[in-house]
Length: 315
Length: 177
Image (tube, rainbow over all chains, first blue to last red; front, side):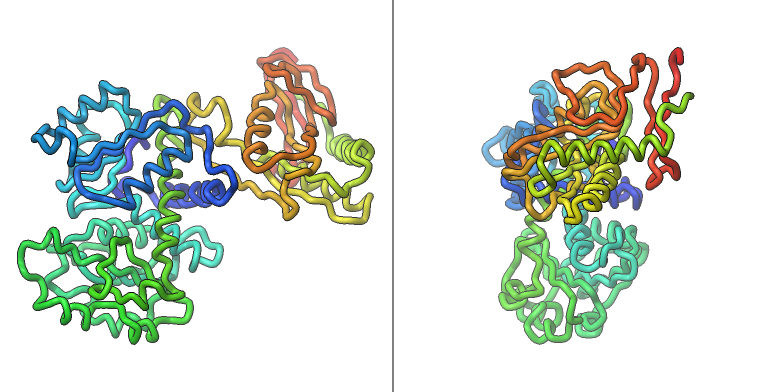
């Protein structure tokens, strides 16, 4: 495998191998020396045409722990804001000798376009494209769930996982539905009908409009951010009503199973989709998700870049 | 294919190595055995078993994966990582015995020394090897050797262990035997 563009590119075995690799690499993050020589001399470009805190920093930390050189490139303050096309940007990066480009872009399919074109020869890693996919986020979520709930199994068979909120605008939801179901989990999307995309019936998951009904039976609950910046029209009457029906608050926390965990990909709208008590409570693994993100991204970079591209890949 | 080390000889070699380790380190109190996956890890467990039997106290044993420190990563497809397990007392100030099945170019051991340096600073590092087949490319030698087997570069040395392959034996394949 040369690129990581979509969860659909991965088989179940590929996904498990990424999770296993991340588990070994997490050891490095816990140890006294947080640096490995593995990717010395490789250049990785963070091409972020959309704002991001944790994904960009997480990929940067992952690349640096593997000793790669990282070049950060964001839309603001670069020629992208002057209207430079993706093609010209890619050719510039190629001329600078980038071995991999981590791309976040507002247009769905931007990463695919970059990978399919002959504009550059390096690996392309999708760090979120429009409302399409965000594979590294789904992998870190699966990693977090597996660590807490799989009881030693390598997959997520038998677990019930609810994904709640703005599915329509969420690339995290799409990647997670694909990956978690691939790993054997049962996924339930919970959202108002206005926040579900067209064609949702074909996704490998169940759909519910009633959070109180679902919450009692799930092992993990993942709250999605209401993406105000992508909303040009009104999807629900007002924020208070949304929180009342679809927000995770202290009463709903009590309805969860004793071992269930609470997740959120961040950034959170505290008080809207999740209250502070729920976000900061003992069941919350939200901060841990960020730490696991570095291990998962180290695993992705290692598996895509460490070996020779010519011979093919273990993935 | 020729059999160079049958099962009884392999067991005897491991028993002798265990005694040599104890003799040189004056007992097992400060030693930590680290096997290099996959076969080195099984050999480490066997040596630990023998040492525990001789000394009647358990010995520290773990595994050390060296994949991330290899110098030939770029020449091959990416490899899966194997577990690293550092026993409770760590490596700081300990006498570490690295254990692997075959010593060839010495590059694996160089990588192991790098991997070890990342975990801590041992008092000393020693190397135990089941088969030394020669052809070193780096200034590395073993402290404990099960058997020296002169080979040509064209040949390959195959180690089979009961845990993985159903039998204990060392074979030499190919080349002019």
